[in-house]
Length: 475
Image (tube, rainbow, N blue to C red; front, side, top):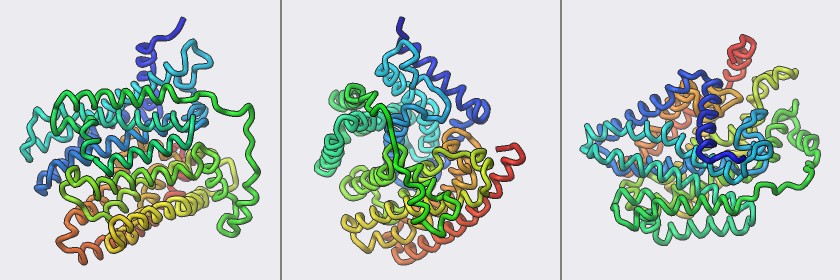
């Protein structure tokens, strides 16, 4: 007897709901799409009141959705350890091929389809509903909203399938995976408009047999490639790791008296992808933004100031670095040892600065080659303080378990609103930069610096806050 794909889809969706419902409470989890719709509606209303080009908002929405798909596909499937314990000691159906009468490939197919459907309901449908203010205030036809939902789901599916295909090829040949990335980037640079026309985003410009076929076949073809190429058991019978803790602890010296920084860095190094995943995640964001800002003016009709735009998005993306530093941690683990949570957060901050800042600044330096030194100087000046703000907010609202930001509505709301307070003014400054370049440059640097100070203030309170919650039993 084998399990059908339909049955797997149904029980995986139920599993997802029960998992997050028990983690956060059913009502809090159910409010998540409501909050997403409210944020989307507020953003759409802001664009409409500012008389901004709605095409910019819609293009940005599809870019965010595609990037989310890339991250979902990679986080869910990349690496050997991710396939074994995505959630610590929790056993999911995705990892049950050895105990249930079902093939691993069938489990992966069901997992991919479930993820696309789940995010379509949880994220993309509320995002589409949130665009209603554009219908009322910006003369966007109401009949266009269903098409926007279809294209956003298509771009998310394309992102998931693309990252999964890349992971599948990578399990066979690293050289082939690098060549595939280079080929895609080259195609976007040479004729990006034609490439995008073959994606679901192309349906917004023209619904023709070619665009319809491309929007359907490209994600499916990439998904099939990932399924066929993915190697499910590529480990050696035993795994060993050199004892590098003592050496690293000694090298860090007085900066790491209790070994907390060495532990955090080794957690990242020994997890799937190692330190390269930090470079890859930031490089992916930089590459997409660089292509859009420099080579695809038809997609971005109003080009924001490149340095400020790239720095702001890279800083927001540094949340993933904090997540990786905390991926094997929780508050209860440290309460069993003679260390304070304030010392733990200090180690996380140092690790964050050692990993996120050099990589991000390197990409901003690379941006100077494409956009010029003058325009990227603003980005370089605001990047570090913005990263400190992201770290401080994340540490304060999510503690050592930042994955709760995904679906715990109150935590996600606090994080989102905190990010919007800082990022929206900077985005507006980037769009209006050509009008008052000197004033907006100085204002942006000053605003980012104040945000960094606020982030450091939140970081200093994070240890006391989470230690108190743990001792009170509210963590």
